[in-house]
Length: 115
Image 1 (tube, rainbow, N blue to C red):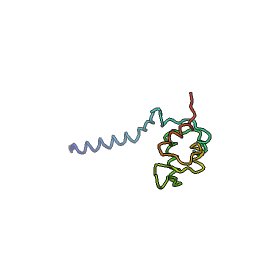
Image 2 (image 1 turned 120 degrees about the vertical axis):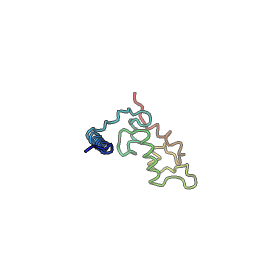
Image 3 (image 1 turned 180 degrees about the vertical axis):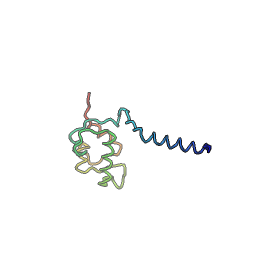
Image 4 (image 1 turned 45 degrees about the vertical axis):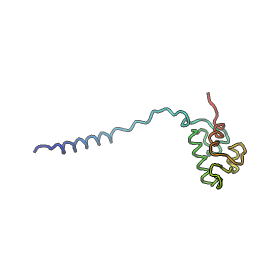
């Protein structure tokens, strides 16, 4: 019985899938830089993060925004302003309100410079 091209293709696909299943995926070897690079944080920032001694800038900003949304701290009349509670006042130099563009600038001083 002759093998049709479609049967041969099906067998090849089965073999390829079997090979893919056996080969483990290589871990990414990309070096983290910029805002994705974990850096040591200040004691105030460490308390805010729940005791984590290192964090990337991107992760830190995400956690602050998550906290702001969770506690509904945006000014209802001006959504570009954040009304600081006690925890955020420690983080943002005792300011009552902070503009959303200031958040990353105010957080930058909580990252300890190394090297």
